[in-house]
Length: 588
Image 1 (cartoon, rainbow, N blue to C red):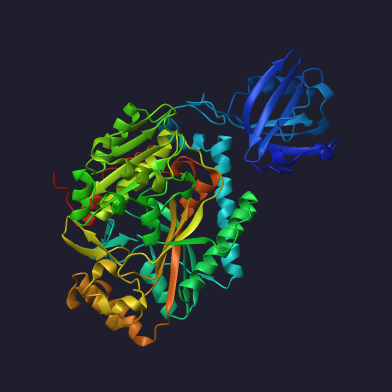
Image 2: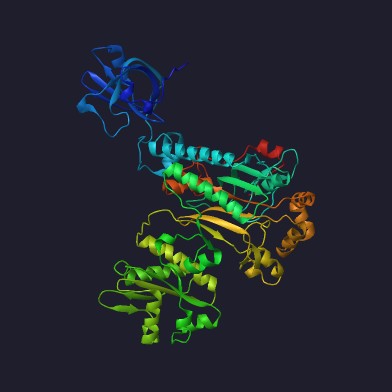
């Protein structure tokens, strides 16, 4: 049946008075007032009121009387102005209604399992089971429309800056590193498997070798890892790569993109250049490589002050090569009672810490968990260093491992802000630069690549790659927004000799590295331009711009915590015939 719809419901206004129009959509609700029936008709743009008058058209009135929520209809009628007392100022189309002259019921609906309304309090599992209904709700619908606009602006920006959109394969060679790959068995090649890409990393680098110079793709990526609020097994990445560039060139393109997105989506002016912290600075000040600086509580090093004090917890940490560091939660003593500080102590122990020392300054007195071990001068020096005043709570962590001290204080900052219900305002956007090239894996007892093994070390670090791995820094950078990592990127290695050197440092033999990555290193032998890029998480970006609590709020058909999709009951057991064709068997 052809529906000659004039326009969407939300696009009409008082200027259309007197026009004959045809609209289509879902019944939001029906109201009967004597000989009048009012139908709120909903589509993706909004709601338009339809009016049925029993005196004018009894047959249409009778059909309208049978309509129920979520029935699908099309109606033709004349746009009329509502009476002064009937105007709905809370609705974009609230000054008008449509006097219906013809009506067709296109689809009847059973009673939905939940009401299609904004900010529904219905159990999320029920909504996800019926996601096609959940997506009709205005708040979720608008989130997806917002995301669509972000994607359009993204393409426009990169197209305008000379980037070429290139699609990379979804079935690729498995090269496990970091997260687990999703594997896809091959029917044609028994016993062999494809992998779904964790990112298009190697293909976009090969696109640079091929001479495309600037690549962009809104790419689907897959990682078989445990889920959380800002993580899904399948996600979307704004993936870009550039040739003949160094770090500054990539950051400049990224900054222009963020400036455009914020202006066009939120009408917020982002001042350029975006502030920068090196990884070392971020860890020293905030204990995190993705800090939210809006919550304050910068980390201070108290080691010099307490290195000769009488408190063995402090002196032992320092003599063991560690440090004593602290944060100050300003104006928090009323909320951070002794009981609450004890809870934070247990939280830190749950994070691998040994405990929490503290100073609590109220209007009446100063309480301290270690005061009996300190001189008056030492206590005053601590308070001065921390800028502590009445109403503040100073929390201190000591450990022989500096990285543990910093990371635990970073987690303590975030947990304290959460418990104090700090709601920071504004947008905290920053680059984290000079990331470590290696990180020490305590379980493996060796250094591993912090990023992927194709990241280029800083030039000044090349001389001590083998001798001082802990201090090797990379031409790598992250983009952080409000304490959430949006993007990670780097300048890549294009020298085959250096690349093999890195593989060797990561424990890969020449034979093993060639088996995994030979197609890339072979390509570098034929004139590889210097190149670099980054990937911006589209899902996370939209989530942050909207202030949504979960990625599920900005993805049309998301997975839940156990990586299943409730609507289709996926994953599911395959047919035995399918397994046979793939030469597979399920082993209990």
